[in-house]
Structures are given as C-alpha cells and as structure tokens.
Image 1 (cartoon, one colour):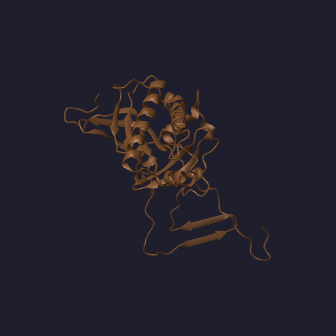
Image 2: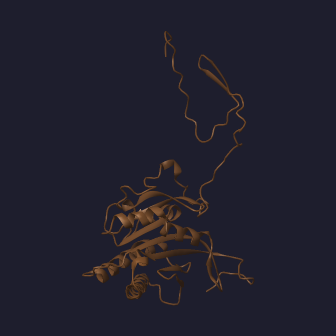
Image 3: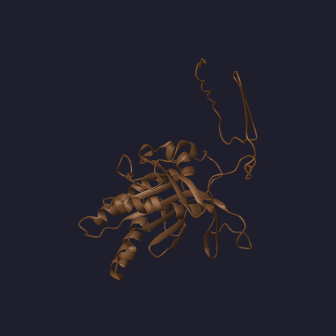
Length: 274
C-alpha cells in the first residue's frame, strides 16, 4: 500500500504510527538479541491480531532492536490505544514469567500524515513517534523502574483526540504529561504504564509539563516543537524603558508583552493607602 505519488514523495494520508524499541538491547549477547527479537515480533503479531489487523495489511519496518509500523487509515485508533496495548502487555507478561532477563519495551504512538514510498515511511508523524519512544524521559523512566516491562508514550494530539475520549481497555486517567525535548522536538507527551494508575515519574527529567505548555487539541504541532516568537522581537540594544504611574493608570512605553496579561499590581509607598 503506497500513499506516494508518481515521483515517490508527493501525497500522504493520515495513519496511526507505532514505534517500538527493546530496552537494554545493547547489553545483550547475540543469543539474547535473537530471543528478544523473536518475542518482540510475536507480541506485536498477537496485539495486531487482537484488533483485527492481519499480516500484510499494514506497513512494518524492522529497526534492529525495534519495529516501525503504520496502519491502514480505516483501523480505529481507539482499538490501538485500548485492546492493542492491553494484549501487548499480556503477551510480555506471559513471555517474561520466570525469566531473569525480561523483554522490556518502550512504545511511541502518534497519528498524522504519512508518505510511504519504495524506501519506507516518512513524515512528521513518523519522526515524532520515534522521538517519543527514544526520548530521554522515556529511557530514564525505564532505567529507574526496572519492574516496568511496558511504557507507552503518546503524542499530545493522540491523547486529546483519542485516548481522552476513553473506551474499552482505554485508561485516560492513568496517563501523565511529560515535556519531551529532543533534537528539534519540543512537545508535551503522555506517559502510560499498563496496570498502574500512574507511571513512576519521580526524578524523571521533563515530568509534569506545565498546563500552559500544552499543545492545543487538533493543533499543527507534530514534531517540530511549539510556536515561538509571537509578536515583534524585543530590542537587543538595551533601549530605554519608560513607566508613568498616576493613580490607577500605568503607561508603559518601549516594551513588548508576550502571552496573557492578567494585571499589574501597584505597591503603595509608605504613608499611602493601597
């Protein structure tokens, strides 16, 4: 299935993107790598089968110790953030029972315009899914919480438009916001560990993204960071600042205010009423 035009790069259709990566694969020997790769593919196959996505009906690329996939546009995204995650978790739990070295996964999820040409997948939606999966907060959480076998990181758009609406196996209240900064990406993401009411974020860099940093639902931010620099650039030469205060009137010259302004408080001088 290709969404590319005749030149191999034009076009693009809206698709659900999954990027999965094995934690700690660099420390494994060849036999362990082969075992974990086989278990990874088996777990993904079981998860896709649980939501009715058959082999050969979606694009999947091998990434050595991970997998990149883009689904057909007609696959309901609620199934992917619900039953698909739940089945993947159960598959990992079954595989890891009694093993000293468990298969542990980070999963990045996003949706957006994707181009598929003869070389593979390209698009901001793909870039962001990969960066959410490989983000420093995600890696640090898995390093500091060795009991966690599956971490799911979704984009803000996916959370607001799919996860937050709920559904069977979907746990929107068990997600937490985390600010992700990686390369040119500066995004609010949503972290989730299945079977836990909240992911173990204590000490994770970038946790608890401020509400004001949230991307608007349905916004255009898909991996290139938030918009910056609304309004004119402040002068760099030092320039004069003039403030005239009289009664309840404050007259300000030579300043640019960025963001919302709720008010300015005037502090009374000694002997003056407030």
